Amino acid sequence: MPKQDVQTCTPYKTSCGGQALMEGIMMRGPEKQAVVVRKPDGELDIEVTPIPPRSAFARLPFIRGVFIFCSSMVNGVRALMRSAEISGMEDLEDEEPGALDRWIEAHFSSEKASAIIVTIAAVLGIAMSVGLFILLPTAVTGLVGLFWKGMPLWFRSVLEGVLKVAIFMTYLFLVSHMKEIHRVFEYHGAEHKSIYCYENGLELTVENVRKMPRHHPRCGTSFLFLVIAVSIFLSIVIFTPLKIENTFLRMLLHLLLLPVIVGVTYEFNRYVGGHDGPVCRVLRAPGMWMQNFTTFEPDDSMIEVGIEALKRVLPEEKGADAW
Image 1 (tube, rainbow, N blue to C red):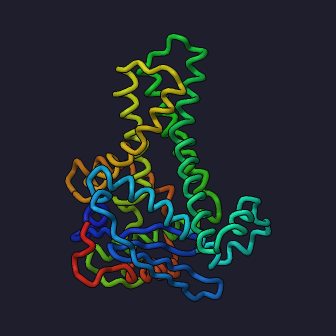
Image 2 (cartoon, rainbow, N blue to C red):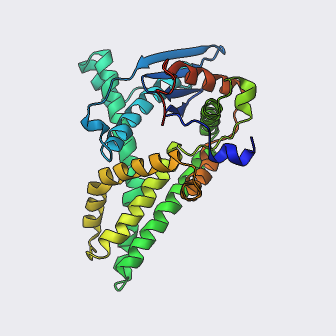
Image 3 (tube, rainbow, N blue to C red):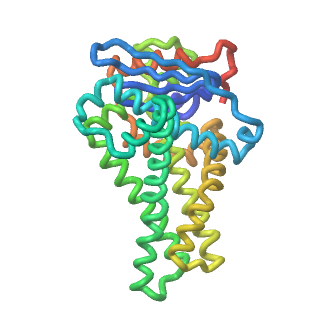
């Protein structure tokens, strides 16, 4: 199969997907989630857990994206913390637990304490992302408006958009050059390659997976980029006609619109990622290009982790994981 064809379409599209971890990969299928981590001794630590079914309401179009995003954040943080512990990364840190961690551990059972800490970490992660990529550009353009009294509202919205993209790109560039994160992004590449191999109907072997591309159209990087793109579009079509100038009001509206943005973006990303026409390939091209910063070529040991994680979540019924 020509390389271009492999990169843009596959005979089968799976809903299985995952997240790169510290020396490992979390993979989610329609029924199970697997966390596979390479231990310091070279052996694999494997944890497989069932995925509880979502309610009918949480499966509704434009609603399901919000639930999936929130659950992905919580499960992702939990898996990341587990991978750091198993891979030995936690042993490299000599920091004592913080006051909040000690208080939680003292007042709750270990299971509840872990759940609380994971939830807090997920909320803080979302808050940091929203603050950095959504609210900060609004605040900066508000400061510009103090010095440029006659700044057109359409220009302010465009400037916000430029700042959002610039901050996002700078963030990806900086974290991709961190040694530990670079290895995580290599595992990210192993995750994509394993899924591509499966979607092309090939046997899941290191040799077959190694030949696959590392960019995937249904990647979380593409989703995050689309969240920013949709927020830019809504800023221009809503804030400008309504003449919303107050910086704090604009920030509040950004927060209120966030569930709408996530819901719309999920459906858009789902459709574009599931179709291979020329228009869809153009629409997902920016997100695919962004993966140059978040995926790198893995070594064979990383590919082994990706294969193991994917095998553990594939459904018994053929086609049950169709996108």
